Image (cartoon, rainbow over all chains, first blue to last red; front, top):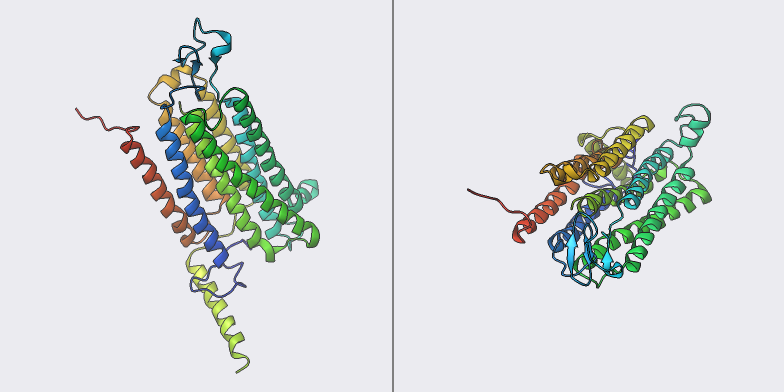
Length: 237
Length: 122
């Protein structure tokens, strides 16, 4: 049985026949859409309006305040030349890590939903792997923590390269947007670790599927927000 | 009398099940679907990053629409398959798409307000 309204008919009766908690998480996700829309709007409005660098996609000469989208600025002293600050290869890797964490999350949910059906994932080692909710919850949490490590590395390198939240409009809006997202990922990782602890202590089964489903919805939402941020902030110049 | 609340609860649950069934709830997909979804998401991400490094494409008018389209496809795939919106109750769809439409309209309106988007006439 899926984690649908029917699967959780044991909840408190409601007029819709749906569990309050699942309605609440969708309403919460809807409100989060508007929160991130405001942060993304702010970033886009301020984009290109910074008076000083470092800039996301352009080279910048601190002494002349000249910029170049194509390459280093001729005649600029080495210490005053700033390269484009965004590191696309590193961010692409972190994006891949977050996408894979979503895959691990749906597999964790499937494992919990089907725990009362031994062998549901098929025979052999692969089947046993797919049936382990602990493994997939741990994998999701680790991948989420990996994403946070990438973000910590990115923020640290930006600060070392001269971009802080107070440097320019780009820095303010960038750190606010990605920082809020990182905070959401952190909350998600803590949530996943809590579920993992419950799974280790007493085991999660189909009766608990809604708990995992709700955390999965939150986790996937964090993923889709990053899909938007990756394109709008990192790739579009 | 003592059995009434229990009977009421049982009836309510039966009614709840009927209501949920009206919302057309389907089984969630399994590994076979999920692995293909992950593969498609990975391929789209690779294409996104690949086009970023093609100067001629970056300079063309297609660059931004192409990236936005790919991003929207990824967004939709995750929401439909990983968040199970394709399979879940229609109320959940409304709870998500309603605010999402408001959010996207707000972004577009602000882009016009701050002249990040303009409609050229003549």
